[in-house]
Amino acid sequence: MDVAQLERVSYSYRNSPAIADVSLHIKESEVIYLIGENGAGKSTLLLILAALFVPTSGIARIFGKVITEKSTKDIGLRRRIGIVFQDPDVQLFSPTVYDDVSFAPRHLTTGDYKLYTEKAMETMKISHLRQRHPYELSEGEKKRVAIATVLSYDPEFILFDEPTANMDGRGRREFKSLLKKLIDEGKTIVIATHLLRDIVYATRIIGMYKGKIDYDGDPYVLKNKKYLEKLNIL
Amino acid sequence: MNFVNATLKSIESLEEINVNHSRLHRINSESKIISVIIVLILMIILNSIVSLFLLLLFLTGESLIFERNVFKTWIFVPLFTGIIAIPAIFITPGTPIAHLGFIAATYEGLLAAIHLILRTLIAVTCVALLTKTTPWEDILASLNLLRIPEIFILILFLTFRYIFFLARITEATLLSLKSRIIGKEKILQSWKMYAPLVGNLFIKSYEMQEKIYIAMNARGFHMKKDEMLSPVRVRLKGINWGYVAVFIFLAFILLWTDGDLIWMLPSWSG
Ligand SMILES: Nc1ncnc2c1ncn2[C@@H]1O[C@H](COP(=O)(O)OP(=O)(O)OP(=O)(O)O)[C@@H](O)[C@H]1O
Ligand SMILES: [Mg+2]
Image (cartoon, rainbow over all chains, first blue to last red; front, side):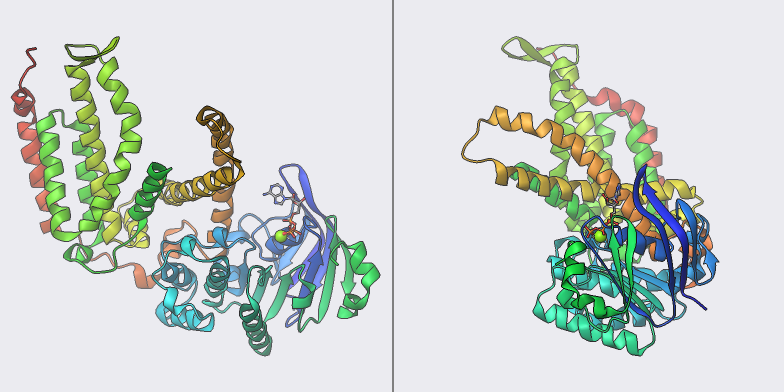
């Protein structure tokens, strides 16, 4: 079964259109990179794929479920999807790092939430930050915590919005090995980025331009300088 | 800018839960919420400065014994009350007690200002006692168990986050403003710049709030009882009646004597 199926999906923020007429199928275990200039609609598309936004028109099916206002709150669906937001300040809303990482396990998993929490903090190497306030961390640290909040409930479809922005060299290398691990576990992954040099393990590239899908195919396109220039991302 | 910073710090510290467990941490959150509600009702209906003062004294005692960090939050009382209390001293009609140029401070005005400050201190102290000794998820869960409508809990929760974001955004905005003021501009000019900023701040924090709600939804926060409280966390331990009884007793005494205490103030004879 397809993980996600979008049929002619459009989305507008209060009358300003962000994506238009997007059709897309995503299969299990694909590793897809969304590329495109600022404002191309990458984040919006991710929020639709995460079943958090209901399309203004068209149909979005995620894990076979048609996304409506009601299904955005479907607990069964939420458990299977994880999204790391572009802005960690939006993602982190609890008083301490520990509270934030344990938030999803408390709501979405069965069994001991503490185990899930500890494991995620260990993976992202943030155990020492557990009692800190998320808002007083450095941007790179925030991003690590944001990723941990999603790993903590082990979703099978993971969406990352600019995961390596603000990360230092070591952070980016560690993200790469995290990605490898997730791929080995068979996760389906979509990553929005405009840092072309950070693209690894891609099985498919989707190029966005002014709210539309302009390219959808194999990663060889990354060698096509002319095309990347046209997308304004080189 | 120091005053702004101090206020921000104390707003932040309102949110900070103390991890060193005191005895107050062990009292379940339902009991603490009931006691907060009792105190807030008292705060509203007590009339006498003396009984308000006694109530504050009781809360101060409780904080001294269990949770001294509460006092950090007192710093932010002047911001909210000062704006209203200081003018009240002068504009409330009554017996003048001191003159400042054309305007006079009145005895009634002074009383009104003291009332206001006492009430604010009471509210801040009892809420800080609760939030510093109780994880916020427990507070939300207990409100739910106490049958407070879900929409109120959601608003409360978002307000809680909102205050903090407003503070943080204000801090960042002030910094960015500071960074763009080249040389020493006149204070008046910089005040002119603040005005449109305030409107901007509200729009920003409003958008932030919407986004945070989406982010919470992404990780399974819905206001449905059975979903919001995963089985591990629903454990109504029974209300700790001993703790609540102290507050009921206190309320009883203060309400009993309030009418008498109101006469205990010396009347001003200039
Ligand atoms: N909350 C919002 N309200 C109104 N318009 C918005 C909002 N968020 C995004 N937009 C608009 O929607 C369009 C697509 O934005 P989106 O955030 O999806 O782009 P993006 O590709 O993620 O950009 P970036 O690379 O800068 O993150 C933009 O034109 C943007 O101005
Ligand atoms: Mg984006």
